Structures are given as C-alpha cells and as structure tokens.
Amino acid sequence: MEILSNYISNKWVTSKETNTTDVINPATQEVLGKVPYGIGTATDVDTAVKAAHEAYKQWSQVPVMRRVQPLYKLKQLLEENAEDIARTITLECGKSLAESRGEIQRAIENVEVACGTPMLIQSEFSENIAGGVDEFMIRQPLGVCACIAPFNFPGMIPFWFLPYAIACGNSFVLKPSEKVPLTMMKVFKLIEQIGLPEGVISLVHGGKETVDAFLDHPLVKAISFVGSSKIAQYVYGRGAANGKRVQAQGGAKNPVVVLPDADIDMSVQIITDSVYGCAGQRCLAASNIITVGDSGHIKEALYEAAKKRTTGYGLDEANEMGPVISAESKSRVEYLIGKAEAEGAKVLLDGRKASITGFEKGNFVLPTILEGLPLGGEVIKTEIFGPVMSLIQLDTVDDALNFINGNNYGNMACLFTNSGANARKFRSLANAGNIGINIGVAAPMAQFPFSGWNESFFGDLHGQGRHAIEFFTQTKVVIERWPKEWARKF
Image (cartoon, rainbow, N blue to C red):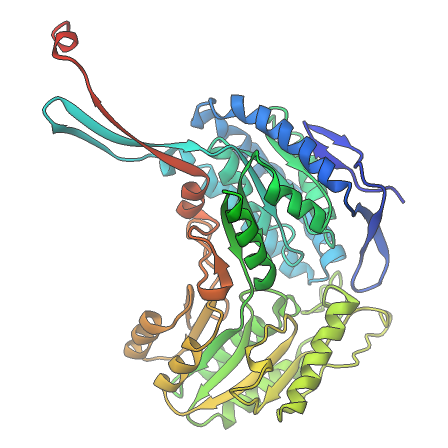
C-alpha cells in the first residue's frame, strides 16, 4: 500500500519520512492507507513553509477581488463532489453518512462567507482629524499560516481557517490528523483545479514532529489548532513563546439544563441527538444533562430515546451512530464508565462490550446513561468524548448556573425552557462561549465565530467569520498630511 503524499508547490511529493502509521476504518479495522509518521516530517514542513513563504510574497499583492475568485470555483467543486467526500469521511472517521453530509455542507458555508472577504476586510477612515490630516487603518496579511486539524471533523474544521487565510492574502499549510488524512487528500485534488498560484496552499502529513516543526519554524506567523485542551494549551504556549499568533480550540464538558416548563418531547429528541451525534466525538456534544425540579418524566424519556438509537456501520443509512475513532478511544470511554461506577454512579444504560453483527471488530460503544455522579468527582469534570450522558438533578436555575460556572471548560451551555426571563438570565450569566436556547448543539453558522471560553480555547480570535478575517490580518494605522504647496497644484 502506497504512503500518502504531501502536496507542496502544487505538486504531490513523497515525504522524507519512510516510517508510517496506518489509517484504519474504525468500523471494520480495514487499513485504508499509510501516513508518514516520524522525525523526517519536520523536513517536509520546512520545504512546504519555504515554498509558502515565497508564494506569499506575490499572493499578498494580488487584489482581494482576485484572491477570492478561486474560492467560487472551490465551492462549486465541493458541491459537485460532496457525496464522494462524505463517504470518505464516514470510511475513515466512522460517523453516519448523514452526519458526514452535514459536515461538508458546513465546510461549503465557510467558503461562501470567505468569498465576502472584499467587504469583510474593509476598515476605517477618518478625514481631517486635524488641519489637513487624515487617519485610516488598513488590514494586511501575516505571511505563512499553518493549521493543525483534528480527527473528528476532517472535512469541516480545516475550512474554519483555510478560505479566510488565503482570501486575506496569506499562504496556508495544513496538517490533517494522521487518523483521517484521506478526506483532505480528496479535497486537495479539487484544490489542484481552482487555479491557485504555486505554493499558496500546501498539505503535509505527520504527527507530533510535524506539529512541533510548525510551532518552531521562524517563517510560520500564525497557527490554528483544534483538539484536546491539553494539546491546545501546549500548542498555544509553544507557539506564542515563538512569537506566533495562535488560536487553539480545546475540549469541553458541555452542560444542558432542562427546566420543568420545557417541551419534553422536543427537548428529549434534541438532547439525544446532541449527546450521541458523531458518537459523542465533538466539542459541542452535550454531556451533563441537568434537570431542574422533578426529573422522573424526562429521565424515562431520555432512556427510551437512547435505547432506540441505531448503532452500526456509517455507510448503512439506517444507522444513526457509528463507532468511536480507535480501539484506544473505545477502551478509554469504557474505562471512564467504569470509573463513574466506582465513584458511585448508577449505569442506567450500559453501552460497554458492544458487538455489531458483521462488524464485531469495530470500535463501537452503544449509547450510555449515567446517573448520580458525585458533583465533586472526576468523571463529571472529564471530557469523555464518547456516547455517554450523565444525568444530574438540581433544585433551581441558580444551582444549575453555579454548577456550569464552576466548570473548567466553557465551550457550550444550553437551556430548554418556555420562559423568556430564564432564557435571558441564562444567556447572560452562563460561563460559556456558545449558548443554546432550546438548541442542543449551539454550533455557530459560518458568518459567526466559533466561540469558546476558559480551558476550551487558548487565544483571542476564533475561527470563522469576522474573527477569522481579524486573525489572518494585521492592522496598520496610517496618519498622513499633504503639504499645502502640493495641494495648491490641484
């Protein structure tokens, strides 16, 4: 089986690293490809970054209206090839085909927003701030920008950054997750067709050595990262210490509060989708479900909904949930369920030791529900990143807010209610960057930033929308006066 190639200077090239790691279908354990993995990938990074730096010198001078033209073509190609890309996502990532299709749609929406960069990059001008003096601000690109992408959304998350970076005049080097590189390989086959100058966009494979090479390379000016909070903090710390602009999205432990006046049927369906969508492997998955007041009715409804959720191979459209990404991930999720038991929790629905007929080797964990986790325990604070719901009963909205605001993370918090007053209070006081009211996955549309607070984000400016434009540009303020002698000539 061939080792996957890098894409540098508009050519597919062989890595300098001969050691590899396997790309594995998490449902079947089939080896889908082999990725360069080792210290030699740092040489690949150096080659890609130097080529990107040379490309930036010319690309940064191209008018913004021309820079966005290739993005229109990319949007068209993504739409035409969406089904093929979605199937690749399901093969290497495991999620259901419906989820993969939705992921590609989100990627396309980011390309659409980035096509508006000629408007989004406009700035301010003040005439005559003093006698004959004007002042204005302009936005200029940074240089070479790098992205370190995660495994859970291989088709979407690179597009939080890629289209905005190049529309702003930067060059861009992407490292996909070594677990799911095939999706971006397919996307880059489309990028080949959109007419970008040599070196503007590159792809380099690898693991930690590749990441460290980006963080240390003097020509890399900005880093975009999505992954666990531990690695996000590492990327932010090392990148910032080397003088780079960094946006590092971390993990989460997302709370959802259900008030007694909530529409139960609607809430149960939305919460179930939020907890078990993508097998719980997303940073906006609901995790801690907090019922205020009597929880009996909704607990029973959540149990029945979770039990009915169909789990299996993602390419079978009858299935709503696929496997987790790896055998290690499955073991970790099952370990944390056991740890919850040891801490005193009751396992109402146990998804451990799952076996799917025909896919017995797959990394499947069935929907799981925990109840009675101690509020001071470890599991209630730990991102499980699997299909596990923890039920918590509290007495008041204020109790729920106190619990939420004691969380180290701050990615998302959601409330289900029919009370406008409680909704307004919640959205104002909940300590999280993305708030949902009667929404289970508060995923911002492409024109809004993907926010995150506390240990869910390290940096200042997030991906998507205007934040992306600001992140991928630096501001320059110009104050100018023209001599009166010159002015009298006109």
